[in-house]
Length: 108
View 1 (cartoon, one colour):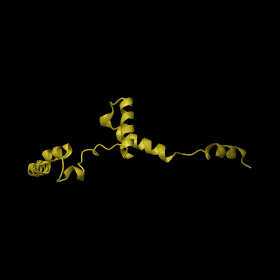
View 2 (cartoon, helix red, strand yellow):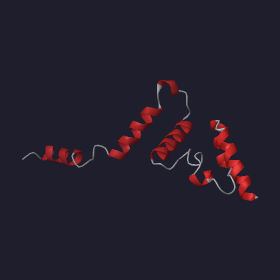
View 3 (cartoon, rainbow, N blue to C red):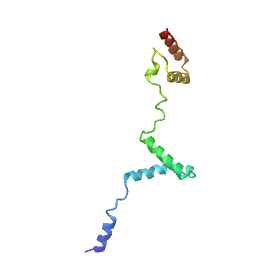
View 4 (cartoon, rainbow, N blue to C red):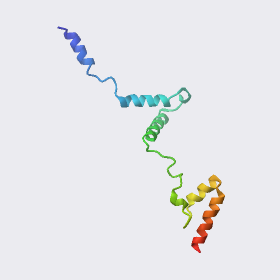
C-alpha cells in the first residue's frame, strides 16, 4: 500500500541510534575538553582519556605502596624502612624511638 514509506522505514529503523559505550566516551571527553584546556593537542587529550579510563577501572593506584602494612610496625625484629619513613613524615619520633629501642633489645 505504501511502498516508498516501507523502503524508508526499512532504511532508517533498523539502524541503532547510539550505543551506551560510545555515549560514555563522548561524555567523558566533554569533561576533559573544557574551555580552559582548549589548547591541548589531540595526542595529550588522548593520553588524558586513556589515563582517566584506566583510573576509573581501578587499574591505576598511586597510593598502594604509600601506606605501611602492619608487619612494618612489628614491635620485635628489624624495623622496616617504610615504617621509619612514615613515622618520620608523621612527626611521631617517640614511637620511632620506641621501635628502634625494641629492635636493639631484640638483637642483644
